Length: 448
Image (cartoon, rainbow, N blue to C red):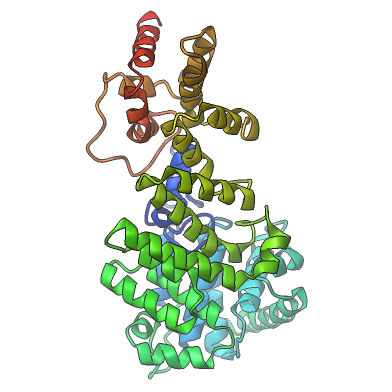
């Protein structure tokens, strides 16, 4: 079973690489993401089986193998792939991208709103593969367009597919006419062309966001900064552009300033009424995610800078906006409480608000909380047994029987040493401040 790699598109559908989006949250929640479309490790693979399509294959398809008759079509292809990632297998996404290429290359439709064609193509894909639960209504909500607009475009796609089948010319990657407009990479290298496209666009916010999807994959920090600034010229209230600038900043102070501007941009883009009406629903509404990423980055940077009180306020606001906590803010909030020895607040968060969280991190932090409030008590034994049940390797790192690796593992597997190392790396300082508790843990290990 192949796990999602750091450089794979994030399964949450944000369009960012996993390492730049949910990896930190998943590590905090002790979650291991499994890449779609991969065979389980214990399932035999025949040599004659079809090759597995990966995220890298889809990226190559969009960026190198297919030719696009209009740069906007290529940008929509990236948008479509990013929005389908994590919900569909990669071979399904590859088919959708290829079909989009054939449709746009032949029909050359005027596509004013990316959400309409993306929704129609996703619906077409779901119908083709017999995927249940994908409705026009759900896609209209996902892409924030009307169901009737998706339906009309879907009918066009259906008619095109039927004609394509009849003519037997469904050849993916077939070369188009010579003299094509530049591809997305070339466009990103041409600020003038990008600004011209922005002037012609009906939705500069969407255009800026699609450019940022490309930006996250650019290896050069200098180039990422340049593209983020181009996105801001296209749409000044692009929160993710400020997030990229924060990620590439040279100091915590600079990062905080960029994240602050990202939050301001996100608030302006969403509007005050939206905040009032959708509090508690954030992150589930896709257009809130750039703002939420800015706020999380701001909170985490405050925390790492030792500004615990300010960080706690931001973490709590994140949880109010999104109680489901897709970003893992609760784990960092507990860490901040423990660092300030505010055991009551940590206890309430872990044992009341998120009492059903059975992650190894919470289980071992419940030990710290119980000890902080009451010292060595009989309850510690029960909590210790429960914690060891979820990860038996963590005590060895805490007591020094195992040393932390010089480089933390890229992938975290629940219950094994990678998870243990990740927990110890973030929390060992708390345990070392409590030598009596560490000695007690060592005694428990000896008596097992």
